[in-house]
Image (cartoon, rainbow, N blue to C red; front, side, top):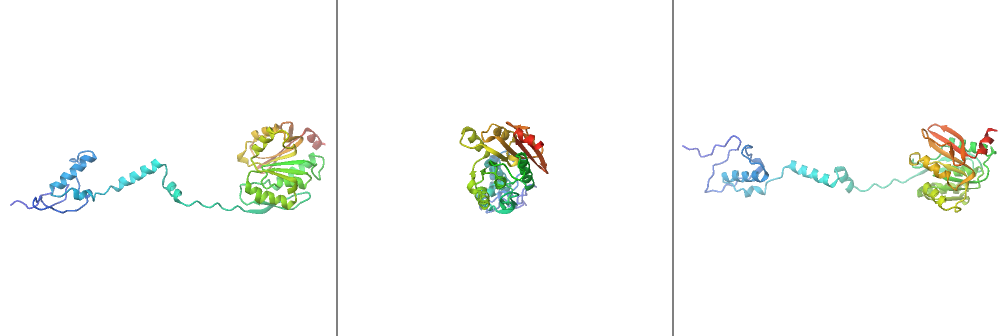
Length: 313
């Protein structure tokens, strides 16, 4: 007697024999129905035709299975990766795009500096708590003014004159100068928060605001403006240069100073610079008067030739 079921090949599941008089409803996922690799034609269209022939062979309607066919999760992941590569954004960039921006932390000040000598000696000065502004160390500032007073012939105070404080930050150098005898000071600082919250309050508390001028712009721009506008700015008797070490080219800066009308005939220039930096022996008509090391910081002073002779005597 013939068997009522069709023996399934080893690579196919056992299914009921085709019955033309009855439509079989056998709902399963097409992906669960294996097809012999050797019999499957290459290409997506050929594979789809093979699946339809297989289902029709067992009396199944291929259309009933097309709606339930699910895309391979691996293919979904591949498409997702391709989409991210095309947009140039990975998972972290996508999260950053929808994440709210973090509010900038408020900047704070403290009173860690003080005036070292002169009329307002020991007066406390404000400075930012963050490291965006790096004031000249007090030991360096004290040594610089000792050298200047000695070179000027008055160990007790500075000879009267104008002071230009470049990269002024807290204004501690210019304030020290006015405390020790300078008649006025100009401060060049580009950070508006530092000017309003640190520099101006320091000038007010020391009583030097009325004899000070603040220039809110980059030092390079200030020097360029002075070079173009002959006579608009006064010449100075002292210039301090205390820039952020990694944001300035010392050679370019000193070349700009050497030809600047801001440098007076008998001017002194103080330059704070890091170790392993090559510095010129002169700046225009000014020669090197002193070069001192303080840990990782160096202090260089250029001055007129007569100052070197006076220091030696």
